[in-house]
Image (cartoon, rainbow, N blue to C red; front, top):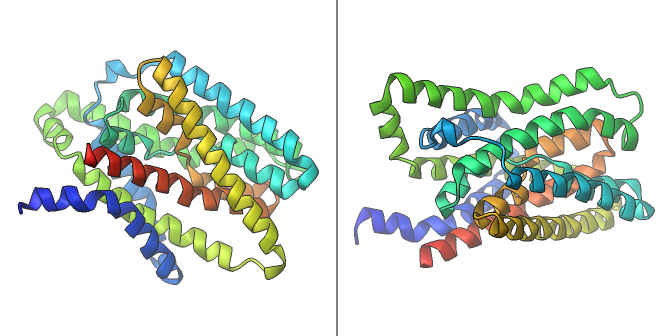
Length: 299
């Protein structure tokens, strides 16, 4: 069996294996957590090298998905508030959270439009950076400094999206051969994503294990509701994408979330227990991604 065939066989199982490694060695993940932003940067740079900048423009797909993201967050908060602020805020943040910076990577592997998801990722992160501070001042901790929070949120996510895009555009313009060479090695992004997944899952497990036993019922409820939120967003995104010509881009754009940012926002501005929901969302969304990659390889 050829080396490429071996890789294609084990590829669908890489994400579950990475999640398992993160769970088993969570106590050591803190030593390598600093690598996560750099891994995401390189992944996005490799992915953006295959995109023609002229294809990046806001479409109805971005607008519809953004509407679902915001309306869904508001509806979940209002419906679940009687169950407690932690439950309401946790599920809300699963909708409100912007698209994962690595969503274009998985989209490209599944055969969807990388340009569409990259565009929506930019739109989603910028909109949430603007709306998050006033929203959190209404539903979360009192006394949020809106301007400072906006700059902090934007500063933590926008460079990870914009800078690799600018680098890819410059590569395409000034060293097109190098850009083409990078674009032809998209498979590297997958393995970098698996490494970053080990870090993200390990950090999430470490946080959950520090919670006291008295909140276990709420943690279970938040984890299950995060799974429901994940399924709903992948489903609605897929339906929107199917209507507009790219069901994969719609599903990944709306369903794959920047859970690291969501956990940070919940810990900083909401009830800290609410962060269990985006922590559980990590497992749900990567289970969906693993299944999609598995069925893609079977086809």
